Amino acid sequence: MSEASLFIEAPPEGGKSRRGFVLRTVRQQPAALAGALFLFAMTVTAILAPWIAPYPLHEQVGPVFGHPSWQHLLGLDDGGIDMITLLIWGLRISLVVGFAATFVSMVIGGAVGVVAGYFGGGIDTVLMRITDYFLVIPDVPLMIVVAAIWGPSLFHIIIVIGILLWTSTARVIRAQVKSVRERVYVKRARALGAGHTRIVVRHVLPQVAPLLVASTVLTIAVAIFDETALAFLGLSDPSTISLGKIIENAFERAAISTGAWWAIVPPGVLVAALILACSLVGGALEDALNPRLRVAHLSARSFRLRRPLVGRGSDAL
Amino acid sequence: MRGTDYVLKRVGFAIVTVFVAVTINFVLFRLAPGSAVTNLSRVPHATQQLRHALEVQFGLDKSKWQQYVLYLKQLAHGNLGISYANQQPVSTNLRIALINTLPMVTLGTAFAIVFGTFTGVIAAWRRGTKTEGLTVGTALGFYAMPTQWLGLMLIIIFAGVLPTGGMTNEFLLDPPFWTHVKDLASHIFLPALTLGLVLYGEYTLIVRSAMLETLGEDYILTARAKGLKPRTIVRTHALRNALLPITTLIALSLGYIVAGAILIEIVFSWPGIGRAVFQAVQERDYPMLQGAFLVLTLSVIFFNLVADLLYFRLDPRITE
Image (cartoon, rainbow over all chains, first blue to last red; front, side, top):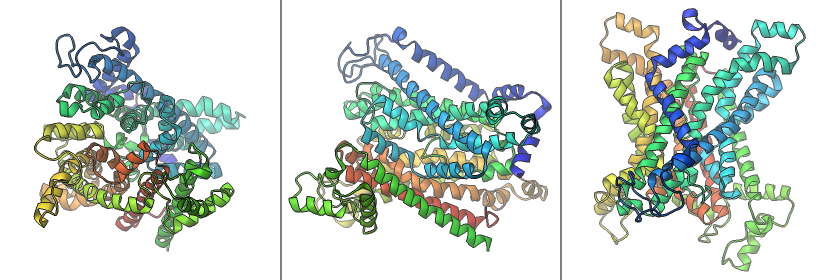
C-alpha cells in the first residue's frame, strides 16, 4: 500500500519526460557510456567473427605456445592456434551464452513478476515463495549438479544458467507491476471493461519494459561469469571455444608453468571488461529507471545479496 | 509478541527450505543417467555385501515414494551413501573436506571484511574526489574478474615465492610444530588472498553505498551543524547505522562463499569441499556430488537464517 503510493509520487526529476531523464543520467555517467560503447563494439566483433578473425580457428599456424609477434599479436596457444582468432570466436560463444541464457531468465522472471504483481493474492504468495527458495539455493553448485547430470553441451549450459537467474528480475518487476496496477488509468481501463490480457499488454508491460532492460543487462554479466565457471569445471561442450573454455584450456595445459602468459591473461581481461561494462550500463539504467532506488530509505532496506560473488548490480554501484 | 512471531516465522521458513532442498536433491539425482536401482549401490569394486546393504538402506528395489522416505531416514542418521571414488562413507569424506575449507575461507573473508569496510567508508566520505574514483575503480575491477582467473594471475605473480598448490609440503615428514605452521601459512596465503580480493571488491561497493545512504540522513546534517569532528560523525553516527545492511549482507554472503570457493580450490588444489565437488563431477561420483551439494545448500540456508535473525537483533523495528 505505502509502497504503491511512493512509486506514484516519485516524479521524473526536472519534470521532463522519462526518456530525457534517462539520457541525462547516462550522460552524467561517462563510465556507463563507455561501457555501452564497449559492449556494442564487442557485439559487432562477435557477429563479424567469420570475416574478421585473422586465422582459421582449427588450424595450427605456428609453434606451440609461440611468443607474441607481428604476425600473431597475442601469440599462439597450446595447439599453435592464433590467440586473437581464439578470442574473437570465444567472445562470440560467450556472448551467445550470455544473451540466450539471459533471454530465458527474462522470459521466466518477467512472466513470474508480471503474473505475481498483477494478480496478487494467492498466486502472488505462491510465486514469491518459489522465488524465495530459488534465491536461497546456491546457483553455482546447482548449475554444476544439473550440468553434470545432463552432460556437457552448449544448449544445456544456456538452459541451466537461464533457469537459475530469473529470481531478481521477478522481484524487481513484481514490485513495479504492483504499483502500475494501482494507477488511475489502469483502473479506468478496467472500468471500461478491458480484460486482463489487454491491460497487461497495453498498460503494464510498456511501463515495466525499461526496467526489464536494465535487469537484462545486469543478468548478462552474471551469465557470462557463470559460463566461465562451468567451462572451468569442464562442463561446457569440449568442442566449442568460449572465453571460459580458453581459460580452462590454458590452465589444464600448463600455460602458466610454460610461461605463456599471453594464453591466459587476455581471455580473463576480456571477461572482466565485459562484466564491468554490463555492470556499469545496467547499474546506470537501473539508477535511472527504478524509482525504489531514488527513495533513500527503501533502497537501504531492500539490500539483499542476489548471488554468489557476482551480480550485485546497481545497489552496489 | 511480534518479535517472537518474526523469529518463529524465519526459523519455520528455514526448516521448510531445508526440506525443499533435500527434496530437490533427491529428485535431481534420481534423474541421473543409469538406473536408479543400480545407481547408489554401483560403488566400483564393492563387495556383494556392501552393495546389498546399500540396496536395503535406500530401498533401491522399492517404489520412488518409499525410496524418498528411506532417503530422508538415512539422511537423518547422517548416511549419505558410499563414495564411488574411494569407497568411504560420503559423510566422512565431506567432514574432512569441510574442515580443510573452513580456515582458508575464514581468512579470506576476514581480509575482505576489514579492508572492504575501510575503503568503503573512505570512498563514501570522500565522495566525488579522486580517492573515491580510485577505490571504486579498484573494487569494480576485482568484482568483475573471473575468480579462477584472478587465482591464476596470483600464481603467475607469486610463482617461485610461495607454494601455489596443495595444503602442505608433502616432503616434510613429521615436521616440528612451528615448521608445520609456517608451511600451512605459506600454502593458505594465495587461495585466501584470491577469495579475499574477490570479496573485497564486493564488500567495498556494498559498504560505500550503505554509507552513502546514511550520510544523506538528517541526523548527519545535525551532527555536522553541531560542529562535530568528521571522524566522530563517521564512526559514531554514520557507520553505526550503516552497519545494519552491511552485517546482513556479510552474513548472507558467508553461505555463498563456501560455494564460491569451488573455483579457488580447483586452481590451488586445495583439498576442500569445492574440490570435492569438482572431483565428484569429473569421476561421475554421484553420491559424493549429492552429499556435497546438500552441505553447500544447507550452509547457505543456515547463514540466511543467521542474517535474518541478526537483522532483527540490530533493528527490532523489522517485524514483517
